[in-house]
Length: 298
Ligand code: RIB
Image 1 (tube, protein in one colour):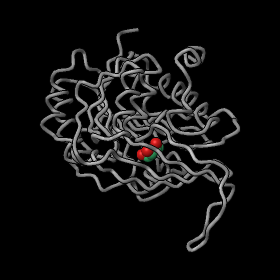
Image 2 (cartoon, rainbow, N blue to C red):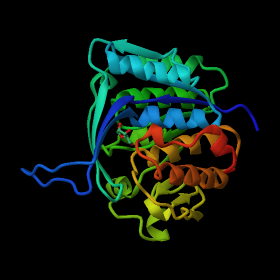
Image 3 (tube, helix red, strand yellow):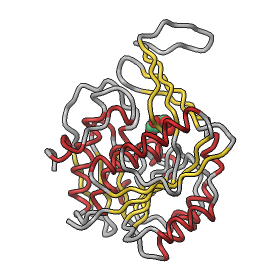
Image 4 (cartoon, protein in one colour):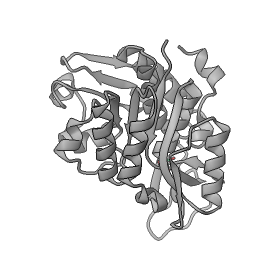
């Protein structure tokens, strides 16, 4: 397998999570089971799982000059994630307020903070200078203009671009065309396409001539190849305690696998296995399997 070099331009957040059997209605107060503080942010989650898989990961982002920012920077360095392009600002580090119910389903409010101050010029300079850069990933928790400039630079040098359109926002045509892969979940697919991904016909109508993967929660995922062929992979049955960050686990693993030279169907299968393991533990990055665990999956 070739060296897998992956760059992530995206968000890093501190996740503040409350767990309760049932979530409150408007105006209601309930007693929960647990509160935890953990590393999150869709970009950081994808970077971390790609690193667990064995990729050489470069994170392009921005943190506040505060305690959350310090501990996220330390976490990246402990995991060997290249943070040369991770900047700091006086704006607070992004945070995510998360509620997880008894079925492991979440509701999330993010406050992007420093994530919204990433500069296009810095991201482009990073993309242009990373050696052997195979895959570049972006999501929608930073300003779209930054991701667009990043993908333009990535395509100019021949890297593969992967967009995880989460949380959904309207995307410009130019940006969509720069995406080699788009990986939405069912809700994001409906926003992008207009219908839920309930049949192969609907899947085929999504970006004809381009590659995509739709993640389908406990049902696994469907890969839509540029030639219109569809490959479905089911997810193993697991006891889901917290689905936070599972989509990110899939995206980061898929990116690692493509960067390693694996075929897209093998990348799909590995991504589903890693994402399924992640829902069996609480938190986002805290739920991710280790490199040793991942090496037993492939
Ligand atoms: O995708 C899960 C992530 O979304 C959480 O870690 C939270 O930070 C939000 O960004």
